[in-house]
Length: 305
Image 1: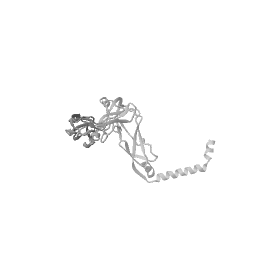
Image 2: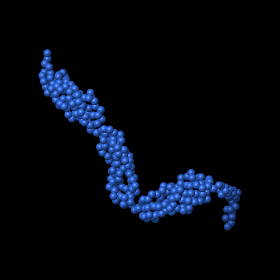
Image 3: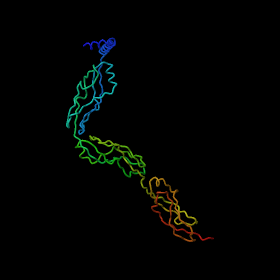
Image 4: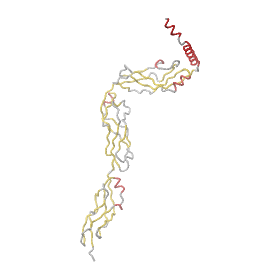
């Protein structure tokens, strides 16, 4: 008892000042104008059994109507507030999670007058895991003259977790739609899985990539009226023009013009007279001659005068 009294006597002035400040603060708060407002609190589910999954729609936040001193309520309004939903002990099935005024950790003097929505319906389902292939979903066409050669997902398959009834019927997991518009070359695009209205989740989250092989289409074009050139000896050619059908990658063949094409016959070491010669054509690399009509022409070399 004596030790307690001795302790009480120490720093009496400081202790008295602290008491007076506490009383003053209490009087200030209790005498402050009270106000009422709604606080938005984000919901966070904790302690859910790892073999269960929430399959019902749960609001991301609740609205809590409170009354309290203006300064405290204003501070709460400017803070990011979170309310936890402790799901320990919950089993599969339908449940209701109720919140009461005492469910919240709010400063002294702040009263909860309304909670919306409340109670919160919950449906929990037992989960299974399955490994399923990924199927890229593609929309629109590549740029003009180009086509999709192949499309593969990386990884090719994933392990997903979800309610047994939903997973039992699935044969693959689709990606979100991938737009091919204006693609002209092989491309790797980051995408995601399209779970739509399924309650699925990746067991081990990984980046989902779509490996798209885009290449030029093969184009066939026919050019008429291409003059046949002779050399090194000059000669008369019959017919003097040929029709050429060419085949190759769309950009190369599409951009060719008739004046770019050179049809020739080789008159080297030929004696005067008439000869039947095969027409050859100078073409860009990658472009091939499908047909020349005619394939050969008659060449007449005059005798030296």
